[in-house]
Length: 156
Image 1 (cartoon, helix red, strand yellow):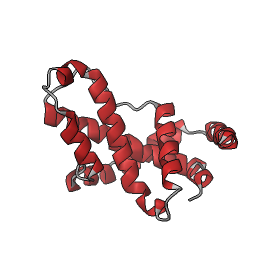
Image 2: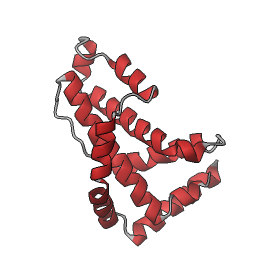
Image 3: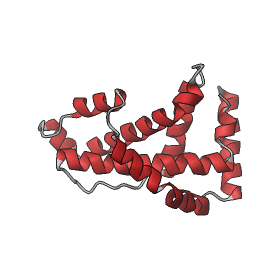
Image 4: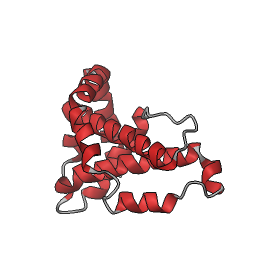
């Protein structure tokens, strides 16, 4: 698995578009299954998302089939990140046991969190997400991200 390839401008846009969609739909499902909406935002934190994607790639590069697993693992990572933020925003409900976290985490880890309809919604919105991230990820920003990646890789 070539991590630098995943951080070309085109792949940064593609990966952020997918991560963003998966994150947003995960938040929607979390709101739906818990009936809790404590000012939760569906917006991703750009740098956090890139870091999460990088860490996922580092984990997958150790596996022979890492490239094959990337799509489903990206979906799960975005869902896990959305769940973590959702829990942080609704901590009082978790403490009061109004939200059960373990079944949600298990669903994500067992690849059962995303149903076919959720994946279809992501696919239907893919073009819009690509357009959004194409406006955000300029050549200069892509170069800066790639430089940061090289520095990070040099430290490891």
